[in-house]
Structures are given as C-alpha cells and as structure tokens.
Length: 154
Image 1 (cartoon, helix red, strand yellow):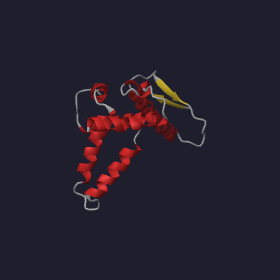
Image 2 (cartoon, rainbow, N blue to C red):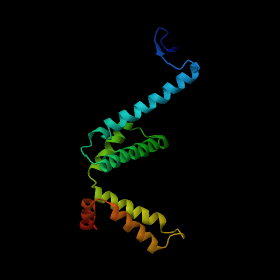
Image 3 (cartoon, helix red, strand yellow):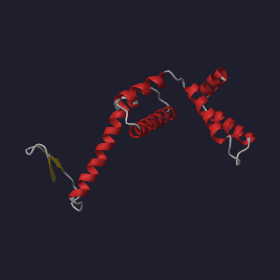
C-alpha cells in the first residue's frame, strides 16, 4: 500500500493498493496516474461524445461509431492542447457533437472522399485512374444502404 499525502491539507491522503509487491512506490503511482487518465477518457467519451448511446446492432456499425468517437476525442484533445482556449473541454465536446449530429453518414463519407482525393492529388505514385479505382473499391465495400444514400447525394 502506498500512502500519498495532500500537500495542502496535512490530514488528507490517498491510499493506493497493489498486489504486485515487486513494484516500487513510484511505479505504483505512475500506473495509477495512467489508469486515471484512461478513466477520464472513457468518462468524456461516454458523457460528451455519446459512446454508450449508440443503438445499432451490427458489429461494423458499433465499430465505426466507437472509432469515430475515439477520433473525435483525439481531435479535441489536440485542439485543446494546442490552443489556450478559455472554453472547457466539455463545451468543445458539445459543439463537436452538435456539428456531427447534423452531418449524415453519407455526407461524412463524401467529405472524407474529397479530402482523400485532395490529399493524393499531388502524389506522383498514384495517377488519377488508380485513385478513382481505389475509391470505387471502397464504395463497393460499403453497406448497400449507404451506397444508395451516396448515389442520391452525389
């Protein structure tokens, strides 16, 4: 057991317990700090990015939703670190989730395809025909319902 005293309140302390007796006190504290940041990550994803609110039953849908939530969290975390924004992370999460709720899946895929084409437009490794072939193969792998939405939108 490791006891950590609060420097500001002498009678306030935290007790960390570990079953691994080979760990040093510092290693136990570091492991707890890492674990705590994971807990904060999941709380933010559940509370603000609606990780637990997805109603789909397909594995692909659940996987895609979880991936998008993780990407959203990373984008917001980087943005928050790089800019000294007075807004809280919670406010940024709410703004992002509002923006994403207005965006349909087909619109999101179309935006990603445009970004993909722009990113590889100046690459000499892929010519336009190869790039279009890759995009066509990607679109063929999408569920038929999304393919129909894309044909209607595009």
